[in-house]
Image (cartoon, rainbow, N blue to C red; front, side, top):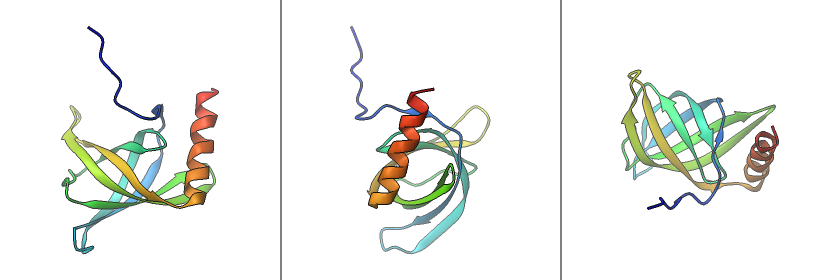
Length: 114
């Protein structure tokens, strides 16, 4: 029996620092902090942080990709503790501007060719 891949886009291993701001369903500030990407695709990231994220949160991300900073609105899909005691959260992009989409696509393309 083979497992069917559910992802729409390839995930590229990438370690980048990012800033996040979490908002509740009424757009009230919940928390902010720094994290790092473990992998990235055109539709989302796997984010490592020191805190768990609630699935109801909206996450505003500022990601540094090479010399560019991109702002992306996202939602939390899951959050789980890893063996090192940090948290890994699946984050799905829900809103990104054209510039962020272009920078992200170029960044992923660059890593696919390595």
